[in-house]
Amino acid sequence: MRFSKDFDRAAAVAYAHRWAYGRNPAYYDYEELGGDCTNFTSQCIYAGSGVMNFTPTFGWYYINANHKAPAWTGVVYLYNFLTRSGLSLGPVGVPSAMEDLLPGDVVQLSFTGERFQHSPIVVAVGRPALPENILVAAHSYDADYRPLATYDYQDVRFVHITGVVRP
Image (tube, rainbow, N blue to C red):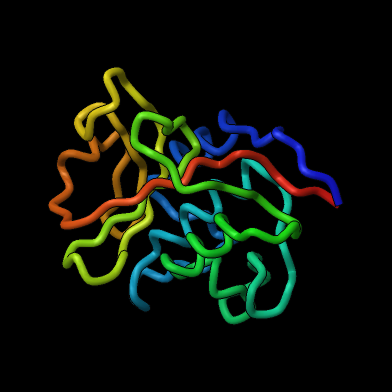
């Protein structure tokens, strides 16, 4: 395995724009089963990385609606997978500040302040890096180029994708 910095942010963002208001038929739509936001963000990240991690339970993969890793569709699990400390296949990220965000990075929102519940993907970053200048795409609350400032959230965290571990 080797770590590379070749996460294709343009491909991740292009995918986000293509499917922000639609559903790719290659993936199940989890809208009626708790939400489709992290599934959508995982699809975008996959479009930019091209690598899944098929490790049972703790990996990050999608085969079909019933055969996927918790990290593919779960907000907290995606965060844990991206920010893992061990060297394993797939995209890698680090917790970051808002000013370090780039298109293709991940935002996670807590609407209640108790747990994180929503995972939009960053599609554009204006300067200065303020919530009104961070634009995201998302499912569950389908959006594209939506300013982060328009969400009513109690807590927010950011993951900057630093690269991809490849076979």
